[in-house]
Amino acid sequence: MLSFIFNKIHFLHYRYFDIKSFYYKKLLLSCGYSFKLWGNCYIKNPNKIIIGNNVSINDNCYLNGLGEIQIGNNVSLSANSMLISTGLNIDTFKIKKEHINKKITIGNNVQVGAGAIILSGVTVNDNVIIGAGSVVIKDIESNCIVVGNPARVLRKI
Image 1 (cartoon, rainbow, N blue to C red):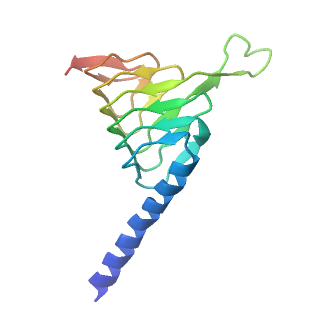
Image 2: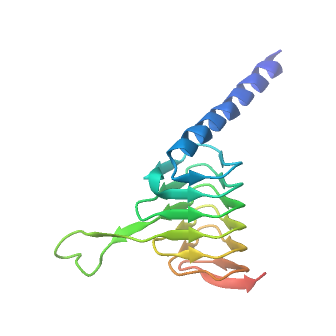
Image 3: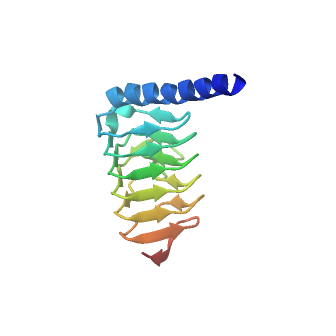
């Protein structure tokens, strides 16, 4: 009997994430089919975010779409990863704290590892794996694995 109750609670837990995914689908600029949010995440400026088909966003992800974010098909953002499309202008930093917003583009078939950070103005092309904890500050070419801070190509795939 206890097992039955736990199974029902577990089922309701996942229904909550389905409802949350439906809610964000309505807020996003555009969203494809089979979009899943697994766990709590923070999506700032969702009206400037485009998400393709079969996209999965996992626990504690942070997306700031102020400068626009475009995510392709078959993309997975692992736990604690961040996409931040805004940053401080270092040229005027001493005078005033001014932000620069630049678009982030994520291609198709991309896996973003746990704790990875993708900063503004970056394009990640198709078929890329970004290692856990990597910080992506420059464009990433297609068909490769990148790791490190700053992220560098580990090998071609």
